[in-house]
Amino acid sequence: MAAATLRRWLAGARGSAATGRKGEEVACRHLLANGYDIVERNYRCRLGEIDVVARRGDLTVFVEVKTRTGPGHGAGHEAVTPAKRQRVIRAAQAYASAHELLETPIRFDVISVDCAAPGHRVRHDLGAFDSRGV
Image (cartoon, rainbow, N blue to C red; front, top):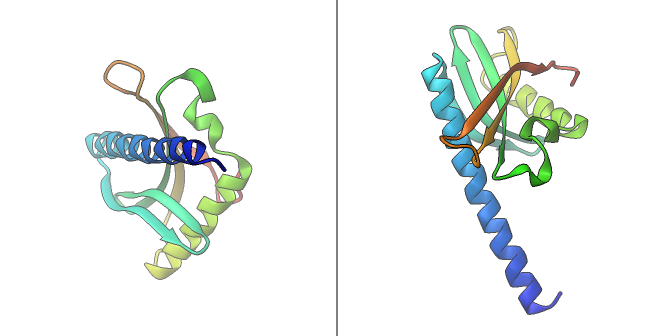
């Protein structure tokens, strides 16, 4: 890979990470405003990662956040593929096991953040998929 191409690729990756962090921040503010407590952000294990772990009462919610800065790659919620769902489910199972949550209710949500919209448009899909990925 040529040096100039590598520099452009690295700059894009850094910008993408910053956009993702911004979207997660917006998603967490949305969750807090709607009565959720943020338990953990960016949980990672060898099986996958979870952007946000939130709680509301006895319900634990595993949230996948997708951030968009324009219409070029479609809506954020459309980017949660079956393979991505399976990685989130496996990471959630590891989290639940490690935190003794196996007998408590859980839910998988997707929050899409459109940064191009004035004030950031947030779409919160409650129960976007189940523990089977459907």
